Image 1 (tube, helix red, strand yellow):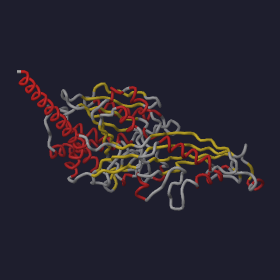
Image 2: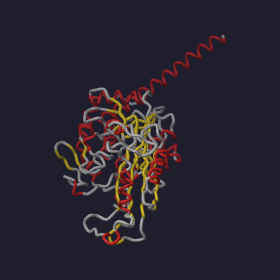
Image 3: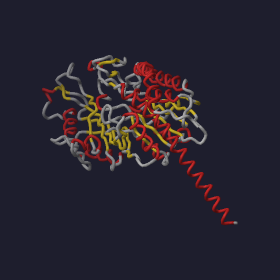
Length: 447
């Protein structure tokens, strides 16, 4: 049985660790770990995975290794045993990051952790490398005397949505099996206002390619009668929203501003392939394409929503243009349970760490892995927490993290591991006592 460490002592330990936390995060941010070989060298992701192997291996994690997944990415997986009969908690994070979206838009160096106005800036500082250092700080604060068995899985391609870990999990179910799963890839309502995320939208991406001519032609000589692929694409994209900004995909619906944040579908144009303004010529374009991201609220399946988007695009194609639609990332919405012992322990731990009761919220983002974990481990409780509050600007230029969120989330996680282990131990004791009492009653009846 491990020794329970009170919250004041845990906080003192975490605060003493904060210089190391900052140094760890600086090293992680320096890895340009965008899991897209077309943009960044794959070696950057490998180096980030190696860093995790060394960091968690140094904490005593056993059998820790970078496991290949079907999309070519590596998932760092290991475990550290706790007391006999203690529950098992799986800690999740991902070490890949979004591309910087143009370094000129950043006010600080993209790949260098920089302190400014009390926040730490850099790509991945919050999403999700800030959550990696939360795991490390919480485990270091507890030391070798862990109250429960802890497993780690650090994903290497979450931001690309290529599904490597989702495909890996069902075929390696025992490797990651746990009683409770902490997904550290969301965040609070605001700095200092704790929250657990209980619902996520699904995702349905497509790439729509339009072709109208065999080659580009002179806009002065052919403009008017000849169809322009870029104009066709613009016409199609314009049908996805009404004048109020509501999503207007046939078969899906819009809503209020608050609804649109997480409870209604939302479609976004992520990118368009067409000639840039600088260097463009007076020509009608023969081809154009766009990448679309559809977020799917609870109550609608990801495949159902993607089918509706594809059908809509096909129906609104003007001028007999040729359209090809490639289906990309796909994932269903997720809804978490909030009535189990792990969630009860998490809520108590959050209140201790933040000094105020936590709330629950829905997030507009998507983590398809949650559904895979839910289906693979139907008895496991899944909880979503993290450092990614709104000011972090995740996925955008000038991403940052508030170091007080790292501190408070590390205290939360350390207290949760202890409280959850104690609650499960108490349940086992109650079950044993009940069994003994029934045994005595049976013996008395037999006599």
